[in-house]
Length: 222
Length: 367
Image (cartoon, rainbow over all chains, first blue to last red):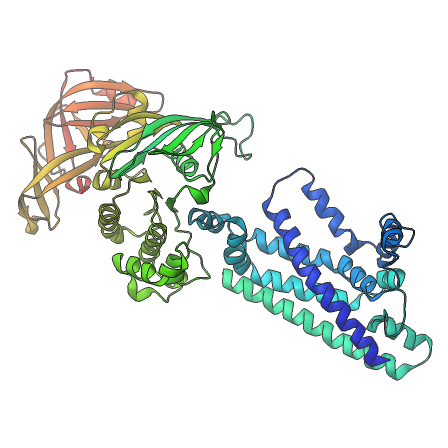
């Protein structure tokens, strides 16, 4: 059970982290460098999962994507597939909850890059995408990496929204946090302890890494 | 091949930070000029619109209306709805604080805008041209201000631009390095053959580099011409204000007295003593003295530390709210700034005979 929970968590966190990184970076860039009406509103909506109880986030995901959901119902009618109680649901829940952390960190990192470097790149004939990849991203990399580490850690610890949307099916949707919950209520203390220690070590490592990255950043700026 | 840049733009400047009751809230850029072959100087006090004009040409900001063209290539035309993207204008830009990419080495910075197949050779050739080949592997933070600006010049010229724009490129460079950098900018223009448009409010840079000067004041072109001609003969009140308080005139070194710490310079039959410098006798130079560094007297003083006591005649008295300026003819015409009280106390009027006192230290060699 420990091993299968570990495998589910590894899959869920990998997929969630990849989506969070790419999508979060794109959204962070738009929020940092584009001026449009409703920019701060978009930021607020994307930040909601950070402050909402995860079960509430999970509830909204069911309303949206459940078999009778706003998007879920037409999807079910068309393909006969629904996301609920699949590993994809666990990955989606983890993504939605982790995304705000990535956006916050990456937006701040991109905003700290002086626009003159991007302008210089434009005058040297480079387009927006190449400028972003070769100038903005390298200059913002520490904050971006910190955002990826934090959001991966958040995805790994996700419990409430996952339980709502994906359930708790061993070997399929039961991630390590869900396995701990089950181990505790069924009195399997050793198993709970092993899982808890493993997750604690990962979390400590993540915080240590992000702190180190942000300190290195301020030392470089000084 | 030496195509000129034609600029005719209008732009209302509202950068958000200015509030409605700010006196400059309605600041309007409304100007037209054409560059000549060589180095063109865009000159004016801060806030006159120099940098915005440069940015509009590069495509970093869009004018409200007007037209910007380089030869047959139209960069911007509001009536034809043309606004060529920055990347396709082939405009090199040297930023005030160089804006070198901090995460790339000098060589990588220069190679950044060059196509892959000629990248390394071109970067090396340009670094060599500016004498910084040995610094190729260094990061910008490891370079001095002058070295950084040399790399920035090499980087801007690397993609073979059709025109080079320079925004006060020497403002972050220490004074001893400036003279050499000016020579290198001059040489770079000759080598490339493209027109340079150089923004500055420094008289020495303008005179040293400029083949043509465009004088800006409050968003408008108030005069154009050879830099010395414009500085010495501003044609309007706003041109006078834009030119500033520097008197500039041509001269020739006629005598060196190092023991006294004095270099004697002749200009229009007038012998002036300037602080000693190592120029060889016979050198043709430009001299500068600020209007506020000249003292005016009604009679010839003898017991004075000022090395130059020159007789002259008041040609003009110009009084504005903030300052009073006299134009005194003493072989050359010099601007002298005084307070309104002095005019009364000394009974100064047009055609009055006066004596000007100038310390040797106040006379400086501009180029």
